[in-house]
Length: 513
Image 1 (cartoon, rainbow, N blue to C red):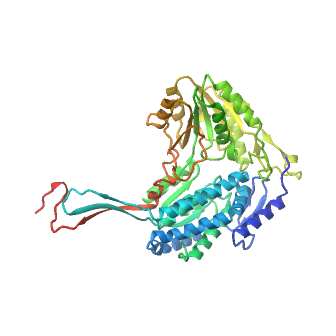
Image 2: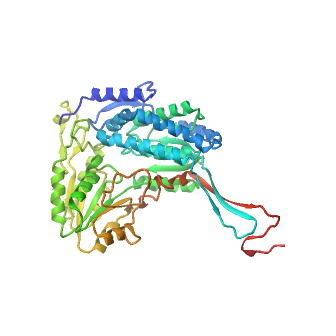
Image 3: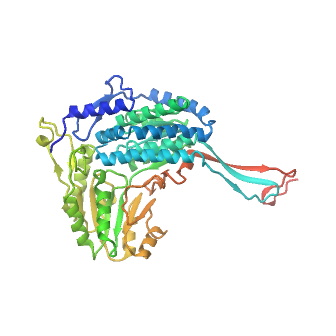
């Protein structure tokens, strides 16, 4: 495999950071930024201490006292300016996403476009933080609800969407009147530095108060300090179910609020009436895009027995045409896994699937190797072909989420059986059905159908738009980010009763005189 020289990738990272206005400072530090493209170091950055976290939260808490009093449309100005800067630096930031997360440039630029889109959404939202007026049972009274800024929002994000998820939370939190402290993945520190620099410039350009956003970098202990701080009103955490099991109870113990976006073990049903041309295109992107490292990646395919052989054959054929390699190369559609641990988890899952009677139809093999990678003895980049595996049943390995491009194929005879298979996993993020049968489509979207937070018809499981609320149920955590009324998670609700009469009637007809 022809991979670029590490020094060339380092140069590209430095140039992108400078263009985004990042203050690089001393290259020394305890946190190493690596690229999965070659597995080599890009640069080191400073890691924050526990005391640094305390200072960041203190500054954000103090800034909140001023920021919450700024009219919401004026708060929207900083987000509007951020969107303009993201548009101006779209290619620069996308370059860093490719370098740190390994996404192909089209997907990396799409992620930055999500940031631009959520900024546009949030600016409009800044004039639409609506409450309600309800009918009061008491004469001369008005009953209503109002929404107020919540406080400091702690954002913990994952490597696979290193910038978009931060923007979903930050754009909404800022227009809602909150301040933000961000702890990104240790695997993507450079994209975080660039985002922080762009937001700092946006705040300066519109005269927003200092301290409305802070970036903290480091290992798990930094995140734990953020999670445990009682001044952090909301912790929005994206990551594994294991991480969520730790974060949720710790925040609950101090009566804070939590927004969790955790694992997804997403499935698509392919009915006998499905348009198979459409279905195969949707399946391949959902399963192989981002090398299977999206929380919405397709991991289970539940196919009617009458079309199962054809679907498997067509997906395997499509997989064979996917070019795997350096994401900067023309025509490449599948970049690297993020690290060795991901590769080893994939191989372990495939071994378990074989032990459970599964058959690996195609893929799963590693591309490149020691000499092919660098020619210098290093062997730290992990490129794999997406794996297609036929399973006799939904065994334990199928019920687990492996963050790699493995697609398990199961079959069904009756539609109710397909829905039961679909729902019989602990996770509940994204789902899809490919069918031209209206009854099946409607049932899939009903309370008797998919139990996921996202349910699609004739489209894959990945590629959500920012206009809808994003999130899932069960072990996915129940949180909602991005569009619709997800903004309510970042605010507190107050119910107000106004008495404009000269009487004092009590509710429910209570007499106390």
